[in-house]
Length: 173
Image 1 (cartoon, one colour):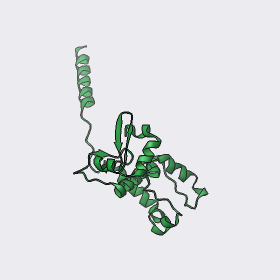
Image 2 (image 1 turned 45 degrees about the vertical axis):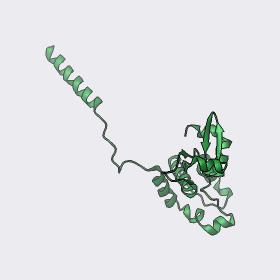
Image 3 (image 1 turned 90 degrees about the vertical axis):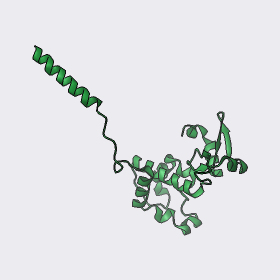
Image 4 (image 1 turned 45 degrees about the horizontal axis):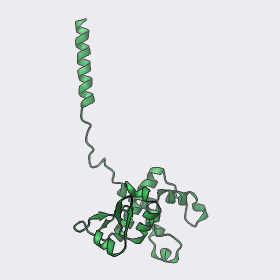
């Protein structure tokens, strides 16, 4: 009986060591940058062919996808792609995960296009697109909005408008 207790104790100790072992750290190669992944999908699906063509943008044939109302709304993009046959856009199939990554990439396009502050002077972050904002500049431009006891600052009027339509959606972002 004593040998069985010894074996049982040994098995329990081995189990505890394995269970308490620190999981292997992710290597940089395993980490996925969601914006880079979105760019990869955007490029692979040839979205830029139309959405970055200045002539098509100017003519109104395609939308400026860097607009926050489009960029921050995965449902908008998903619905648009689902009913694409009603438009002149070619059919593009995206999984839910791909759609998420592309939406994050599109949001980064808006942030890069409209960010008004550098890291050195920024003292706020736009709750819609995460662009760096300088509070004094936002106040001067009328780009602030109070909600729920907090004041939010924006780099552009369109982000402020999007936020005002559904502030709760961005509150914990």
